[in-house]
Length: 404
Image 1 (cartoon, rainbow, N blue to C red):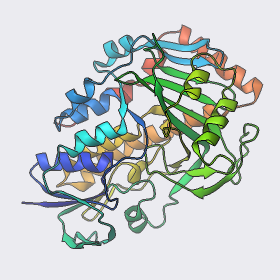
Image 2 (image 1 turned 135 degrees about the vertical axis):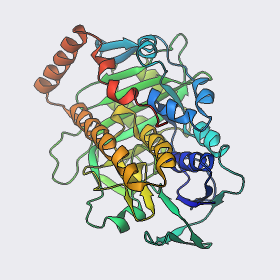
Image 3 (image 1 turned 180 degrees about the vertical axis):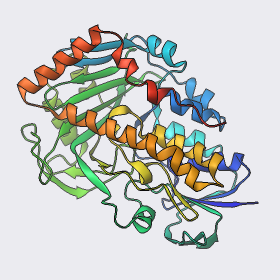
Image 4 (image 1 turned 90 degrees about the vertical axis):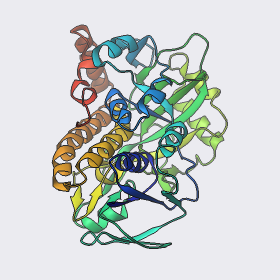
């Protein structure tokens, strides 16, 4: 039986382990953390990723958690719609819902699909030989016919395989994520855009709502404007999530500081945004700078090693595709594990397109000049009147299907 070693027990790594096991591989997952307790709050599983999860028997359990209903799209800070659609229209167009769920829930579902004994917690990988497939770990040496590097945005394997690649860069924005109780009568989701700031609200199952926000921060050589009072970045506290590794900001350490900063940035925004910030669950407010890979890799493989997820194509979260693309990678890799050049050909062009589109959207949300913001909002409102552009822009992303 062919042997696969998966480095990293996140969303992509666990999906890859489950998918490879279904294809007849013997799988070992090396995760350096002592447990799979995930860092982060919510994540989106779009129609493309739902179809990928069907291949490992998880899709229907995720669909049961769909909670978004009614209007969706983009609004101004005062609540006026710029681009408007609905969850029902999206379901009709793509045949599947977009499901937002707790990261912990998806991790548990994926972990339940990998073979017993395959997961080795507290195991650090010290080195990989792409030629032989030997993996040196804190628990000894492993021999592999395939090594799957799902070790995140700061992937040590990626640096070793492609030492000339520049690696992750700062996107110019910081992000907040939080959980709150869903306001009575609220079942719709969407984003609201202001001058350099953004706030998203998405219902979850079990009466919860997942919120996320972004605002620009200064980085070396970057001229983006910064909301008053936002300080420069200091010590790293990256969580390895799809949102990218991050830095806690000076003067905002501690949840009270994060809540106060959010309340200041979004004071006066339309209901229920200020209420959700004020009522955020204790311990749920996370804050990290967003990083991404600005340049695509030349390949997603070298020798017996394949990269996936953030290790291969870390992207900004603006299209909600970070976890989705890692899941796609995993099921495609399982089908093409005997032909890694074919895996690169299948995944590199698609993920590069989504990386670039997501980063372009991130730049658009950072605009703060009143004239530029006015022109941006007017263009979106005009496009919205010309048809359901909100959904059409996702056609080439959401209609993807896993290989047979």
